[in-house]
Image (cartoon, rainbow, N blue to C red; front, side):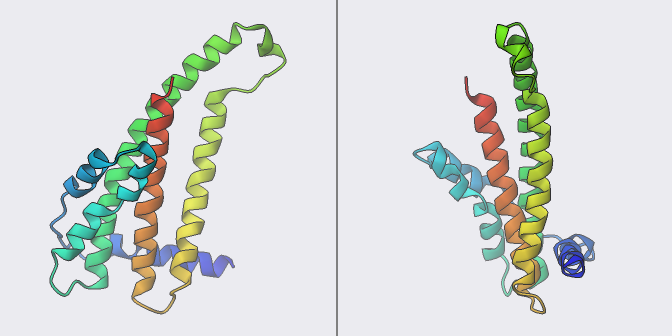
Length: 170
């Protein structure tokens, strides 16, 4: 199993290690889709729209080109997720401080800030395993790296949107 995960990790990292290649990537199709989503729970369906537009813009796109498009959108979502995580952490600190002033604080010693960090660490581990598994389903084929790249886009984008929604809740 460890060998399979190590191999899958290499497949996932392959597009990042490829020689410097450029793709024409614009995040706008994803942002347009999110803006047009009628409900917030429809927004995760928009994740990957920009990457798909990027791929459609490349005649005879190779697996590396496809993976590069996916990697660009993954980077976008990773940055957005970091901002959302920081906002959620600030909110959690305020909630922990407020809760510490209540009578229940002694009976319920848990901290939202700690739970947030644990959740995010567990999510990162799960994402890596999930995407490695998706790649291994197609091992030995060019689709392996593309599957891993699509998975990274989807999972990172969905988590970013979840953290944003959580930070925005009252």
